[in-house]
Length: 235
Image 1 (spheres, one colour):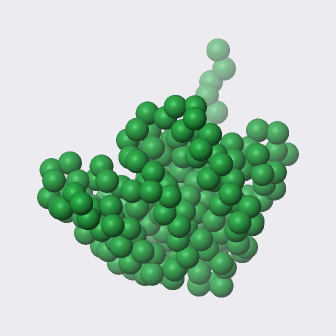
Image 2 (cartoon, helix red, strand yellow; image 1 turned 90 degrees about the horizontal axis):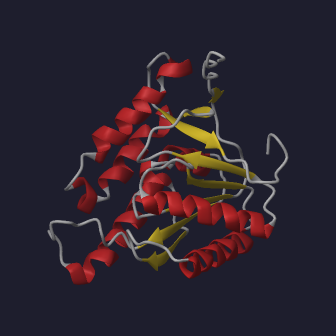
């Protein structure tokens, strides 16, 4: 039996790739918790960024601390406020339900929505949850978006980001200069920080990601290269 090979060191990215950026988030807050630093860097270098949030986030209040009738609207307001901290005002909210088991018709509807979003914005770079995210909504969005990208013949770069499960990254991006923007964006999600200290947890993950290449200084986000079936190597 062959010995396992060591994991290759991730590439060090001092900057994000330029282009038109489309970000898919499962819930209102994942766009900040996952690639929030990358989003801020894209905006700082003048890239157009659109964020698509799939669900209402209505399952994010298990103890019923907030008014159920206005909770989905609250989540969207928090998301928009957080994105402003990153320099983004272009956001679309599909309003799909949370934590649901998807039928094939549900998946097809999601693929159609995602394909329409890709066609409308014509991105060169797409961010999605990485393939091994443990939350079912995250994993479902990954598979739905990747199928839609294939359907549209997308030829750009697809990058997976982490929220629920830590990855072995292909690249780490130094987000130190925008870490405070990300911190403020996380704080905008007051309905979620009421339950979980996301500021501590997510920025702690980003601090850990700085261990490779940055000697444990500052903050970084890990990314996976998503290779669509049939795409050429390196795409």
